[in-house]
Length: 465
Image (cartoon, rainbow, N blue to C red):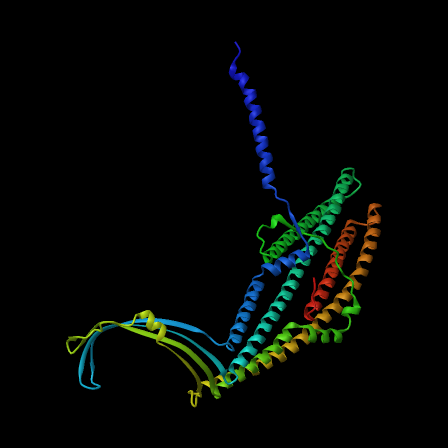
């Protein structure tokens, strides 16, 4: 007899395999999202949108806008409406003609509509409005400078990752060279054409090159994570950075003249404009507080109405509630009156409140002028230092260029002689390390050249992506 279980087993196994295959395929699609490549511009745009500094800066600008609106509103008349209800119950003694004891329960209704307009506030409102507008401009310029700082910071971090990547490529190529030489030495040692000490030295050199590559990869990964942290990205595996052409052209026409760069910075730096506005803001605050020495004049107008209803009324114990009373709605319609008046107030002595405010405002204005001088000096100094770093970067480019050319020629010559057995392993290894160092120096100098130009753009206030 044929065992039916044996017939069912292959079919069940096939279905299981098919089902598992579909499950693995489906899970593979879901578990492997595409890696998004970010350019330098993408990173800067993300930082400008998500940075805490920018988010708070936008809020500060919004707050100052609300303050300007509030200061402007002081020129407009206000409008207030109110209403009320009171109920009185108890004894009252009246003696206008003859003493009368009145026991009453009375309901009272009222409503009013009033408005006032500041005619003169000792220039307080005008000064407050001007100060609020200056404060709004300062908030906008502060936000703009914060964005420039973020742009430079992201650029530095981005270029650092690119430098790390190029260093990893050089270290990888260097390791490949060492591995190939180790394989050759192994074969030559086996046939007795090379001393075993050369093989041992090469193995030690290969191990050192591997360690160099491991450290370079770790440094690159850490710098990439640090950049993504600034972009508020926590899943670094789903993102990578786009390679870019390193602009290492000195561009001396743009960056070579230090005096021109200083003048540009004094014209373009928004933090210097902020410091200037802060001086004006402080001066308007002095005028605002000085208004406390002057009188204030306001115009007021109102529309008032009230009505009442006796619930009970006893005069000397005799019920005297009127047989009929005007309805509340009629009273609230007819019992109206208007009021228009001009009010003037002058604080002759306000316990030194105005005097202390003016004194404080003068000190703050003096501090604002000190800050302006410091900002001016800081701009000139930072531009000169950045220009010196730029000149140094230009000299480095010239030096490392010559060094790389010489290192390449030296390595080619030494490697050829080593292949022919005309030189020893130490000379060959040293020339390889010198070439690697020269290549790394060239890449570092190129990226540093680009970064120094970005730094000058930042210090002159003209940084662009």
